[in-house]
Image 1: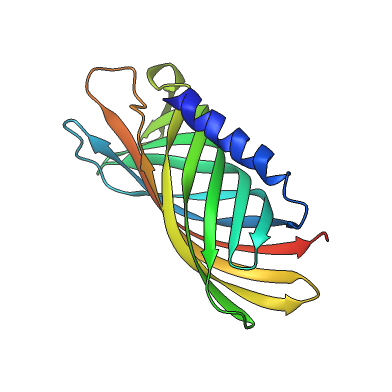
Image 2: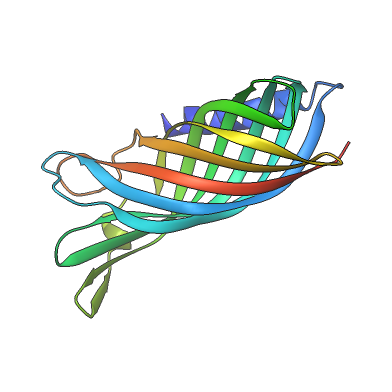
Length: 194
């Protein structure tokens, strides 16, 4: 399944290059992650982390665009006396539909993501333990969200979005299934290239 998601991400970006009328923009983004786990016998609380990265958008039409990102994302969960920090390098691809034609443009977005485990650490009090060997090297899932784009003029846009990351891969090597769940709020800026 993870190879299918990865293939879909790369195929989508490759096919988009074929549209001669596409408008290309690039930008930077960052935000907060409110991460937790779901799955078998999971009883944890949300852990707050950060995410940041870069992106490129291909506007096939005025109302439709495809965005590929590369992000550093902090995930994990916590309990009353411990915190699990799991950090990923993520590659999401989003299909966005934009409404309106003014300076403020709402959007809806959906698309897959693929994550590569960078490190994992369990903190109990002042003690930290490397737990990278307990977790899978990859994660994949689906992002759903919406947001607003505000025109700054000269093909520059400021945006704010909120998205929910629904992990579809069991991220633990231990018995039982554990899935990432992340709600994030992000802000970014993009610059048109053509």
